[in-house]
Image (cartoon, rainbow, N blue to C red):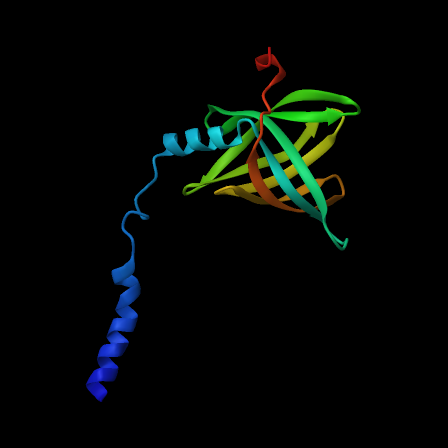
Length: 159
């Protein structure tokens, strides 16, 4: 009986090691990850919800992205389709994208968007989902949702 318990313990402790997937431990191809991220965001919308610290509940949220492309180093250009008053405007925004392995994280620090305000944010993308934190002046909170393809393109490309 002692032998059976000892063998069961050995197999239980060794099974995570045996089951480890060596393919997942390989370093991902950064250029391929960046290309996939650019394609995922170009012509897409971030559709979800946000919460505000200190307030109950959540509200709907949507960010149209006309295009995304890597510029240099960690800097990316995201063309955000903003609605200011009654007018739709394409706003090219330089955003730093850092990588946690194969997971992109958009970072924005005290970035002022004319007519909208100053923001700090961290937004992580995984699969077709995003989640993050945001700060706008003296209030902030969390945001989450899905990346959904749309037909959004920069105005210069719609002719």
